[in-house]
Length: 423
Ligand code: DOR
Image (cartoon, rainbow, N blue to C red; front, side, top):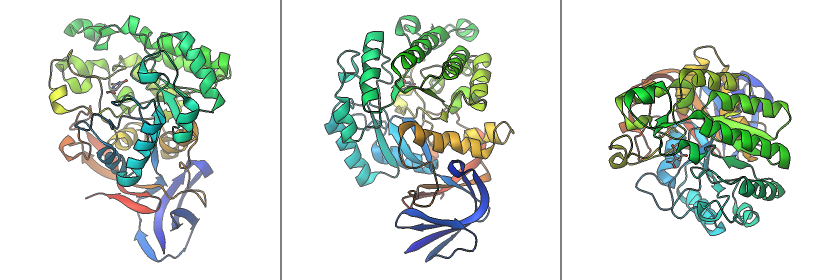
């Protein structure tokens, strides 16, 4: 039984393809791309953009342990609804992903109920305690694609050095949340004019910059692949640019809220604008954008961080850090990067699919014949308004509520099977 996706505009950065053609799927794989193909089941894709499914390097699925916020089923359904066919899930679960048994458990659950491929990122240190390293060999063997203590930044350079040397032996990227807690302290938002004006404790950009600087240096010293998570500050972008110019094995990601919003969004004390790192000032927003455009920032991820309404419905200082993003990442990026003419659609798909696949070394991000048929179909002309009540995610903590956006995933396939179709 073959499936033919007919007449779409196929965009595949891995083969520099942007053409109207048919794509044939057989046994869950791309069997052919061309004109006038035939298949058993034909899906008319006229007017749609067809790309390799998006891969999000930074997602909190909250399972095990915090399923009231999200679980593997709801989180991967949210992914599918955003055209995302692969997610890297972060290890700050309860218990954390620091043991091969938990990696296997997540993969088993994902195989049972997942609507997207789940790639566990395992912890760097046991129980995310910044001390003893995890058994990275066993974690990789169980299926982990990277190591990170995300949300619990590695404070000690000595631990980071050993982590880099160890992870490098197994070709595991070390993903780092860049924050010196002695500098960010008890802050809730970016430290600057706005935090002073509204009287909230600030987190200075140097808390991020000093870690980015250290982490780039450590990558240069050890040769390990260091991936900078959710980059938000201007100086950090420049540090990464310079480290890359020196040949450092570093990659970097940012998230849609960092190139569309500034800390002024916190003026109304709405906790849906509270995340870590925080929204920065306009100069940083522009620098992040520049970093995306000049290739310093390789990927767009979401840091999808679901939190329940009762947790976010608190005074700014008491609410948890984090915002969801899976169901809006493509549309926000398309609207603000591609529709405005700053970036080509091919480059956006490169940053949301092909590059992420390369960074973690997984299949996907490509529609070459023989590749897995993980596919997103987008209507890039569809205009819609973000309504968190319509989310598949269990949580609604988005920065983009009510935003008018253009471009939307309308049909997502995983291994050639439909996992989402816009209602
Ligand atoms: O905003 C954030 N939320 N930043 C992090 O680093 C962690 C995340 C979470 O787990 O909620």
